[in-house]
Length: 241
Image (tube, rainbow, N blue to C red; front, side, top):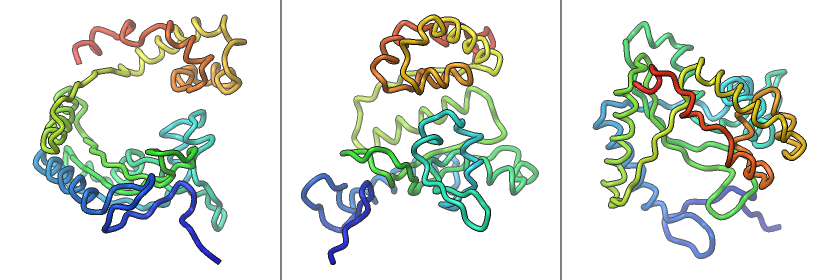
């Protein structure tokens, strides 16, 4: 009997292999070294969190109407606990920060992480079910300087890798009040077109209409193209930020 890796998973080898497999390990290591160096230069320290977390952590942080939670998580039950393989790194970092009361030890925490994440997506070239995510998180400071710092760090990382033709596109989700106003505006726009939406988007419309913006269905994308823009409803405080 011949065994192969699970569909959507892959091996990273010392040599470059033929086909649609990732680059050799030395190329991965180069990227990892560059990311670690950039993060540490900007004052971030590494954290490592478990690959297995409680499913509810991601249901709460990502949202129960997202494709990640509804369709893509590797979730299972063990000893009456609902568990999953982590699909992203931010929620785990936030959980660790709160669980260990880090705010009592330092006013501002700058953390970075690098490791495997898991999503049961449709396997295709460049999109694997086990993938690697690098990220930075700042806790204890919500000022705009933190956003600028992270953007500058990423640009410097790309430049250090020889990628110099980089364009930065800025966006904002605004404050909770802004998001609520935008939710109402989006709902008012989409409701008359409800029957033209995909089944998933029709179901999500009342609970979380912002999820319609993420839809990959062609019929949804056609409607979203003319939808209200969140930037048009930002408060003065949000714009200043």
